[in-house]
Length: 366
Image 1 (spheres, one colour):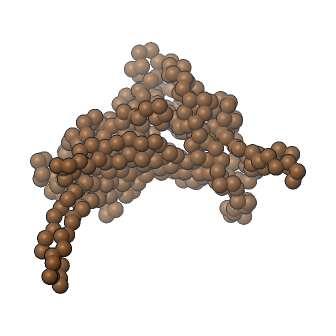
Image 2 (cartoon, rainbow, N blue to C red):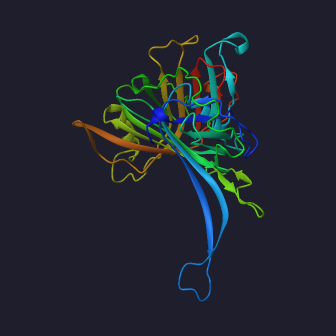
Image 3 (cartoon, rainbow, N blue to C red):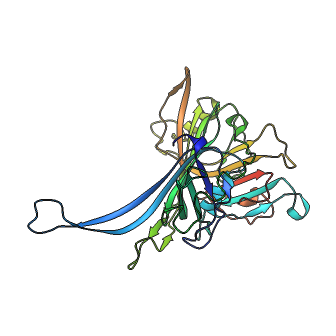
């Protein structure tokens, strides 16, 4: 990404109509890299008797792709979770009328039906000039959230767009109110992050594992895809598919990590007993901003709740500054032990493999 001070990355509020062009209303913060890609499919028709390239070429389709890397913040993350999962709603537990901070936003991966998710218009380019491009009909397809001890949470989102257009193509010149007002955002620190680990039939968030988590990486793929029909150059719609996801963790090899590894092995620990174990866990990556509070407008918190089955075994051992570590990867696994009912009594109990809650001081995610 070129010098960020000379650039603008903005997004519209969510639209439900595929390809509807919205005006960018939010300047995004914490962006470390952003890219729009024009996907142009051109067919060249061979010419009989020619020894050189054909003089006949036609564009048969065009669309767009986008990707953004950013420092994860309590304020910006809900905007992208809206696009990945659809907003379940805002709530202020214990606050009458739900009109005062802190506000909580709930998300869950789709299980029995597709999510009703937002699409967006992204703007990217040099603010205040004509070097701005828009990507209407942008659908978030993939989400990655990760963090490592001693640093901040980071997030990557990418997906596809119905098209990419120049700022002069049916728009006013330049960005939408280029360089919109800055907002206060709060980065999510690993210093405020806690690992919870429970059995898959238990209650998530019941058992803290201190001094164990070194890094994590949650990867979610929606497998959404654009649809192109006859009579169209640009995609006419987009479709849903089954979600997949994984959670990779690097753990200090202490008693907590050892217990996980041992659960993979035979129950009796003997050659005669060949019954290996399937390890299924409820995992919460929880975070409470240490400078905030549990109530009021200053409260900031996030929970990533994941039900997974341990895959790929375990390599013994890794090294981190002379200390032993172990890398463990969990694939998403449906569990009745994971539901929004454990996050708020106002939500309906229903099993899942991935849920999230974010608490901040904003009454809107757009």
